[in-house]
Length: 360
Length: 266
Image 1 (cartoon, rainbow over the protein chains, first blue to last red):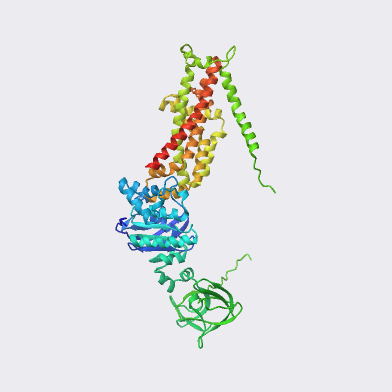
Image 2 (tube, each protein chain N blue to C red):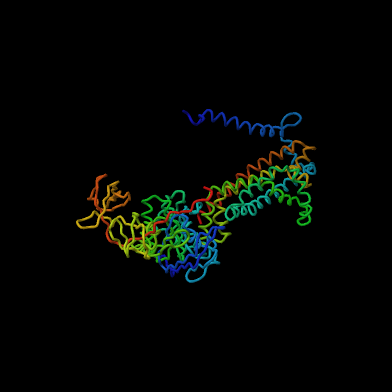
């Protein structure tokens, strides 16, 4: 592949604040992305992840703070001068142009000589596996094909940074899986700095170098997928990344005790009543001598390579166990379970709000 | 239970014939009238148009026709250069103003032309100082008069495309604002712009009140004048104006297609 790669640029957000009217949607965001790195902004809808991306693109104006591309402050630079490539959630191909003409657009805007532009556009389409469909108009392409053309169109100008705004969320599951792998492969081949916005934690974990988990306008934690999964810094991250059962526990010393099972604790030390996040793969059938609790099988789900079974404990809590498919449980059976001593994230139990309105 | 009524082949033909007759009979009757002379039918009235002896009688018609064509052209320019970009701007950057814009654009339809003239007369004293008293200056008023029609056509097209996404995509690819409008939005709004322009031409060619009351000559005022001395030739010109509108429709449609096919080859 001869698509030339320019020096990938670093991206830095420093104290980025964004207000929409009187509502503050970003509260001083700090984020540094290394050249060639693939970083996902992950969070529930309304957490500000798309706003952050649009600020990098210059499609929204900063309220306060600084955004740097390649070490240069671009806060005052309009979108068309930022040298970025962007793929949108909605289908954004120009309907009056063919796939090839769409891909040529950015090069024509940069006054690239026609012969060179044609060659680069053809290469970009080949890169996304659509070399044969250059003559097609967007209406005759499937959703997945349209997003691949959009990717080729964004990459063809060798931008300093690639911005992906939930580009897969309009696609069906199979295409989504296939295309996300393709995006990651192309990104690694070209070594282009990439910011990827998604609300799908599985997607973020699967393709990112690092993931920034966002909530309510700030970053909860930023780290590699492994770090987020194994050592979530906050309850929000523990709840949002991966699957967990929330279990009541008491902190004594530096351990959380759930049903007399001691569990190492992540994060700052706390005391008293709390809830801990237990991953389904850390729940096992109790062996001889293991600390244990009793539970009744509620449902069991076959997932191909594994099985997940939901239990209701005697003190009326729900806990999920992930286990081998060969192991089966009949609904209603009583089972003795244990939890592996793997560090767990802890959430303080919210005290009941005692305020009563005066009028009542 | 039948939920929708789909007319059969015969019914559709009957409807087509009735509607066709409704449109064509008056036109054919008008055409027949232009061929009448005292004894029977002849081309006498048509031939008279080119008769040098009658040139002075028909002169207002030629002046009016020329003025109306110029007015139509200037009005189209106003629609394409002023109204359309304003609408794009309102839809992109000031969506809250959309309702206000729609209301303002509809006003000319609710205000009688006679009332409009009362307001326009003093304005046109200023216009006269600035641009002279040429008939083409009426186009400023016509630009307003055609607003309810031209904006409808353009807005329908704007609503049918994803204006914001296309704009943001073009911006992210390095297009200037002019590039966005010229290279991306205009081609996708072609249908709306074309329809808006055509309906503007139709309104301008049929406009009488403003021209008459502001003492400018256009096709309609000329027809009224000539009608008093030669009814036949007035009718002939009305027919020709109508035919011209049809022709315009065909030509503009063709030009649009040629433009797009050339782009496809580029």
